[in-house]
Structures are given as C-alpha cells and as structure tokens.
Length: 369
Image (cartoon, rainbow, N blue to C red; front, side, top):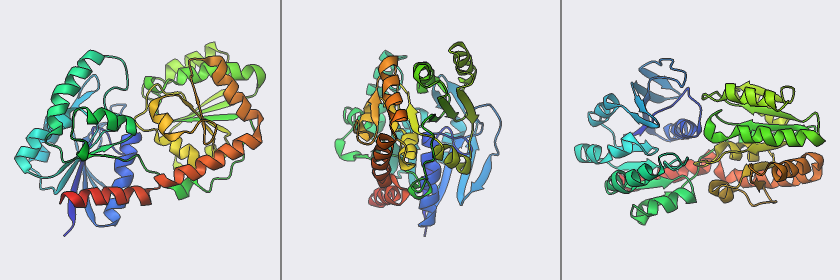
C-alpha cells in the first residue's frame, strides 16, 4: 500500500519560487518511488488569477483553497478543515505561519506524524521584529512540541529552531536540483554578461545590483545584466531605477523563462549575482553553480554556508557599491578565474541533486511510520 503524503504550503505550481520548487520536485521524485502525494495549497497566483480547485500534475494531486493574507501571514480555514477530515499517513508543513500554528490541532485530531520544513523561517526582514520574536517564542514553540521532525533548510534555520525545539528532532536539508540538466551547460559567455535569477521582490534587493552595475559600467560600458524571474510587485520600481542610473541599454528584464530558455541564458552568461538581504536557502545559487557560473552573493549567513570565498564564488557587501563592482569587474575581465571558480562551483552543486535529497526525505518519512 502506498504511503499517503500530504504537503501543505500557501503557494504551489504554477507559481515559481524556492518552496514551490522544493515541494514540486520532491513530490515528483517521491511519487516515482511509491508515495501517493497530495499538495494542499492556495487557489490564486501572485497576480490574483484563480486556479482550478483540483488538478493532477505529474502524478501529484493538487487541492486548492481560498487563502486570506494578513501581511505575510496566509490563513485558510477551508484548507485546515480539509486536512482535519483527510486520511493521510504523513503531513509535511512548509514554512512557518498559519499551518505551523495549526499543528497542535491537526496532531490531536489525526494522531499522524507531522514534518516541518523551515524554508528560512520568519526573520527574513527586520519589520515587526519584536512581534516576530514573541510569536516565535510562544506560538511556534508550542507547535514544535507536537511536530515529529523538523527539516531545517540551512544551518542558520537549525540554530534558530534549536532555541525552541528538541534538537533531536532537527535535521538540516537544503533544496534540490536536477544537476544533470544544468551540469553539462557549456559556458559561452563573452565576458560582458551578468545574470540574476529569482523573484522580483523587495527582499531580493535587485536595486542594489543595479547600483553596482552602474559602477561596473564605468569601466565596461557594454556590460549587460539579465534579470530572469516573475514580477512580485517590484518590476516597475526596478525599471525606474535602471532608467535613472542610465542603464536602460544595459539591463534586460526577461521575465519568466522555461527551463530550455533558462539553460540558454545561463550558457551565455559569465557571472551570477545574488544581492538578496535574506535567503532561506538560495536554490538559484545552486542552479547557477551547477551551470558552471561563478556567483557573487551577499555576505549573508545562508550564502556563507554555500560559498567558500574565492573558491566556488565570492561574498560581498552589495551596499559597498565600489567593492562589489570591483569583485564583479575582476571576474568579467579574467576568464581563467571565471573558469576555475565556476568549475569548483559545479562540483560543489552536485551533492544537491534530487537523487541524493529524496533519499534523505524517504528515510525521514519511513522513520516516522
């Protein structure tokens, strides 16, 4: 008999993002080895378009429900009622929020094992910090007494969770990629092309990358920045900033790219930029690494877990425009360095292949049954 695995997350396919990618790809792999997978999620895209209440994608059953959003707190009584009335063997909750707070109710009602993936937790911005600390140390702490296993997306998350949960419950597991799809990418960059991949949202701080690009342009006038990803409310601001900085001819807003298109863009790029002020894990960095691109990332904790400065990438302070521009400029002007760092990055990324990650998930689930 197949194990009935339920995932719950506010957003899912066709929406793109770190959590969405993790749930989609892990579900595909788990379905291949015999799991009966259902994803419980919201019924709208980020633009408000309604999605079908029921759908099956690559063997994954999707059940969508209305969600109400209060700032970043997504609630759905309908989805909760569905979970309480459903017959599942394992529930896997993604992210901290309404469904984390509902874990005690779900556990008492169903008695089934519950797994939590942190995906960066709630401290990704400085806003509401006092409230977040109170919430984390009360509601989240209570829920952790009912959860059976915590999958921390990074060492940073692991340390946070150890403050409120039994450390024996915690395992660190990053996001996965299909390394083979990116690992054979042939780099055909011209020493002039930078690339960003991810959501166009405030926390990604693409505005900082634009300021750095303006400085790089002073020495490399024909430098280009490809910005790949869907708009989460920031594109208009970024286009305005690019115009003010005189970068209209140097920046291309690609928008959504299919995997085939993405591979083409990555193969034509020289350096990958990650100017984020916070990342729960940073799956786009692993994708870039697998493609053989040197990464210039913000010196934030999750990036320090992935990048050995000068070996498989570079860590910079994007607020220090001059030094960040110098690091990028050195890479663009030194092909030998790009090839060496990119090669190290490609090798590093291989451990995040889904063939390895799904074994960890499968082992975790089986230990709970």
